[in-house]
Image (cartoon, rainbow, N blue to C red):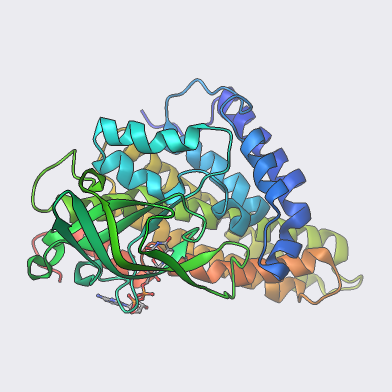
Length: 387
Ligand SMILES: Cc1cc2nc3c(=O)[nH]c(=O)nc-3n(C[C@H](O)[C@H](O)[C@H](O)COP(=O)(O)OP(=O)(O)OC[C@H]3O[C@@H](n4cnc5c(N)ncnc54)[C@H](O)[C@@H]3O)c2cc1C
């Protein structure tokens, strides 16, 4: 059965989140971007309005698909604010993939009280981004504790995170097979927050450097419960990306849609009187093509999410949707900039300018476009040993 129509309860869910994006996110979007700060009041409001008790009930048991509906609307509101929301965030996929039931119960419990808590995922190191197999952060077992040493950078919510899922090698000579995920709680002696990046886009979302100096964590903070094979750690890292790439894809779709809608609004309301008809038609054709591409990107994301919900391996599809949506968001936002010629004059034009800056990173994080193509090619042509 193929079905891309949303049920009534899914539509109600999406509409509810859209209202939140419109009323809570858009009004503070530009100010947070300018100041690189998000008021605590926003986090409290969002925690309340997006709590399971407040969200409309959805019949379908499709966690990933629902998450895509949620995140497209939130990204339409503001992608930086949406990536900064409290919750386990990027810490969740490796915990779910590699945590034992006891570890999951223990670590997710932290997020169940009424306070604000964040999570983070620390894979990237200076010089080690795409090729995580070459990572140099080490974990050495010393009695009942792991001792972690190394440096991670560009970690989303790293400075706020109550738990940082940190990937480190237990034996460099093993290459990718030596990589393991560890849970490092905030405040652990030896874990230090370094530089907070000043970024071009997603400026309100905090991106931190984390430094581990003889950072000791209990032995049972190693996430290796589900699968004990030698490659389990590396697979956990890659499995995490299979889960997060559709998420990045749908955030890109949300921004692309915001830019598209703003451009349509500008054409309707602000295109100068007497603008040549032929030029107007060219703009309309371009917008129509963009709308088709936004739909295509969304369907690619939904398919990857549906596969994850159906427990079907989705590495190729996750990379395809991320690569496509990452390119599309740059195309849509740059068209919006060109057509509306943004300046400081109107809020709409300032938003368009912001979305253009926000878009670039969707071509970079969770694997650059080049890396997505490699993943896709490896899956399409397994017989050729693509390095
Ligand atoms: C805003 C932001 C938030 C981030 N959040 C997180 C986070 O929460 N956690 C985390 O762990 N990381 C995070 N990252 C890091 C991000 O995932 C990496 O920046 C990304 O994977 C690229 O790695 P790199 O920067 O080291 O670039 P490199 O890997 O050095 O790549 C540089 C260039 O070389 C190309 N390249 C590399 N290898 C190949 C190859 N084999 N074939 C062809 N081309 C290649 C790349 O495509 C790229 O164009 C974040 C980054 C940003 C900008």
